[in-house]
Length: 333
Image (cartoon, rainbow, N blue to C red; front, top):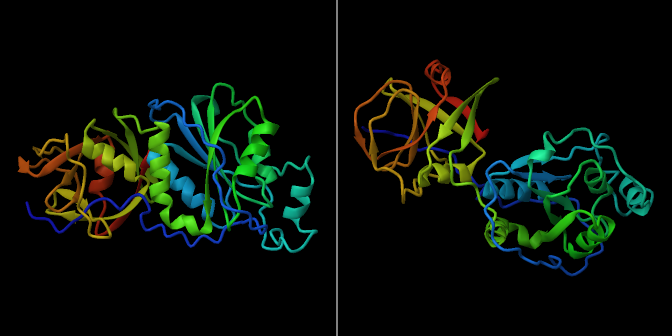
């Protein structure tokens, strides 16, 4: 079964060489991560992790995406009701909005959106830039908007060169009833190693994607369909790469296939079947080529075809109806 295809986009933003010029603290303190007291490892169930973040120009957002990928968590951007302009963030102007807010301990900038079903999350990550050694006041708005009882809360922060420990310690003092466990901080020079540092941190915390059945979504244009993944290493590898956006095309009037953009074809197949007889709706990886193949017609037994999951009813027709090349956004459901 010849293919010219490679699957799945390369997840994890390996290419994140964050050109992060984010909202940074101009005070230039020494870099630091705050006190870290790692709790005993404990598996966190898939879907029980929220990764909330406030980001002005991308630094914190990039780290948030990596944490969501490493944990299978839900991303939530804290969006200010009144967006920050460049003038608002001009730290050299003592009367800029950011300076006024940071100098006013009672300032609580309004948030435009809400995190849905906060009660369902056991673990919450909150990310923010460092503004004059502290977390932006909007982070306090977020902390005061929800009930964090029974939740473990971790923070992560980004800055030009200053430390994140002062912000973390300040939040811990301000909110003693919230279980703020520890902070992971990145200066601008550390962002190039963000992927490795985030994964090491998550491993140390013992927070991992639940190795059970996972649900994923496929969005084509304005339509979204869903699928259930098998419990095998290839499916878990796929989950670890989400979210992805892939370019699919037809192959042999039987399946829709996609390539990894960098030509990579390495997948964790350690406990996955090495062949299968695909039926319409099956999601597979063709291991010799490393491409993703979603079948909309039945096919014969194929060596090297690794089963990953199955589309829900109704999803097959959506894939079958696509002509030529088409873009698909894949994420956790």
